[in-house]
Length: 128
Image (cartoon, rainbow, N blue to C red):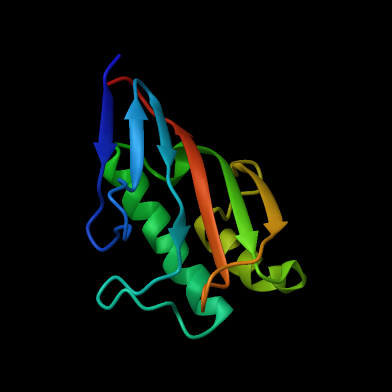
């Protein structure tokens, strides 16, 4: 199988790392933050960072050939897990059907600078 780097408009890493990597029907993202696609700045609030983060997730999975419906698992790191209500609001907008949601693991993390939340995901796509 061939490994293919995935890049998405409006999202990039500061290091030479793609947004995701696809091998066969598996898509693995790198770290995804709640940054403004135009400026690269973090959203001013946790709610805004969650909204921006899920927008990036959607763009990245689509750039890899899938949709939000192909995501099997997300891992989320938050500065303050006690504020999961903001994360859950964005989660429910992205995955409204309780019978069709990916697994999720949310952990506390000492995040850099103004970053309040970040995630990664694993998606299972159709064959290339």
